[in-house]
Image (cartoon, rainbow, N blue to C red; front, side):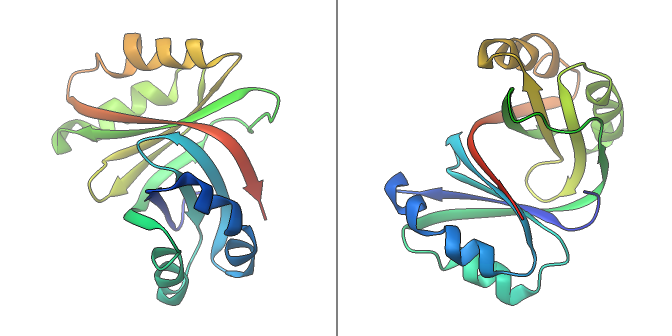
Length: 163
């Protein structure tokens, strides 16, 4: 996905996530959504979503915070494998180094996709591997140590829904 945006949402009570599937399914601009265990509770991939869809997501019952990151560039390096562990990494980076950081991350074996975005996070990275320990190792040993990386937030995908 190179058009559209990501929307990451946090819910005070994660049990509220169980009732949103029908709502997300009904929104035309939603391509995929993932329940996430991390700072955020929900990751939504939007393609050409009308503002009404974004407002509908922001109005979900129990949502306490939502951050949208519009995709500027990026690509999926390989297809997702539902039998493997997956996670998102939201990267705050020095704006002058985002392209260089992205180029390095795209080459990692565990990288599913690396997207340059507008917003708080300069990069959104999708990782997959045989275990969450290995994903954590990639984040700790490779991504967080790159010059220009300021802060990271990880969200382990615990349930995926693709339209």
